Length: 167
Image (cartoon, rainbow, N blue to C red; front, side):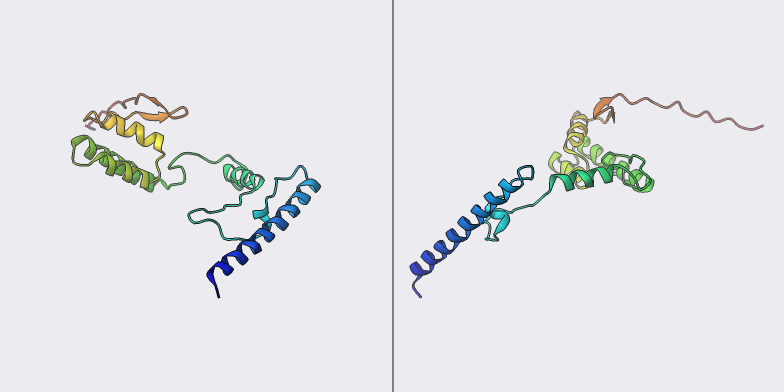
């Protein structure tokens, strides 16, 4: 067959399908004015343009999922945070790894780009990574604890335990 003929017929077929789907979407939107608005893409499956994807997310479903995730099976609020879902052992391991990464950055043994990649790979947010990197870039680790909505609060030092010898 002739290439031009195939192109013209394909365009006409798609135009017909899009037009019919658009008219039907308008009818549905008029019938259900309080519902999310439909477009022709909701009613007909045509390939997406190269490099584009389509994600269908119902805002009500997302809100229900977030609400369910915020409460445990018994309805109690669940902890939030970058490492809240970890076991104590994994949290401790991650904390040691973070400290080591920052020490290597501060000493010049590691680059900032690599350190950012490593911190990101264990699930830290960009805001936390920025705070930690900024702290390590002066060559010394004085990393504050993150508290109160991500605002840095100075770390309090624990008093050393005194060892008493039993006589």
